[in-house]
Image (cartoon, rainbow, N blue to C red; front, side):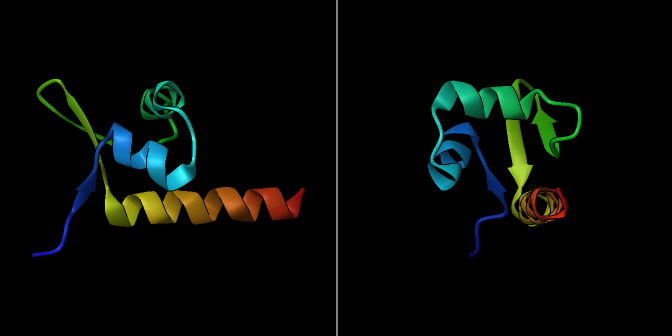
Length: 61
């Protein structure tokens, strides 16, 4: 079975950032966070879409 979500530590590892920076991302309004109880998760597909959009924005500048 394929993993459907990432947690904060996985986001930090994927992006090469600290865990505290990953939590900052998870609390941003434009970041695709899914809250289940107290847990903050990110659907893998939505994360990839968000990351691609950030890359497009960086290239456009």
